[in-house]
Length: 139
Image (cartoon, rainbow, N blue to C red; front, top):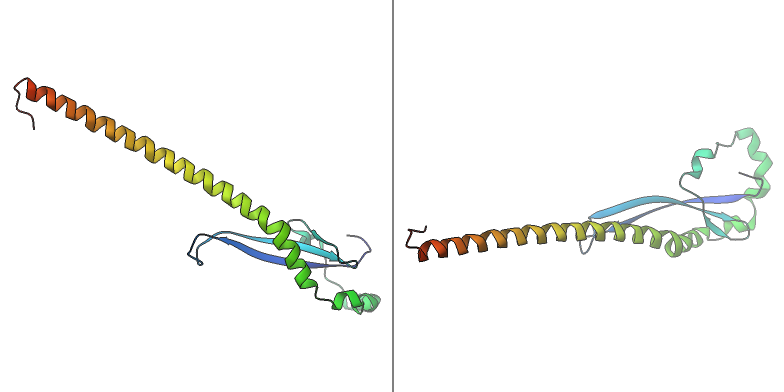
């Protein structure tokens, strides 16, 4: 993916429902890439699929990169900070929109069913009242 060395971090996060911490609504693996200047970016959905393992013979060619001072920094915190400010809120908003649409659909179905039941029993009540007024035996 170029000649510039970069570190790739895998971020695993989940959106949980309400007070039940064991109930995971959505779980996602995302990737954050950090370069030598400390810039963190979203690396895409599966950047690891384009990578190949380094041959043992080629390891000597990158010893200077592995010994670079920027690699020794606490880059994991930078990756987590990037994910928590950019990736996780997008995921949360997506899950919230999906769940709210599902709840709205359920509420509409319940409301429709209740209105039908109320109309049915109101109609039944009126018919029974009419039968009683006409002198019929209403049960």
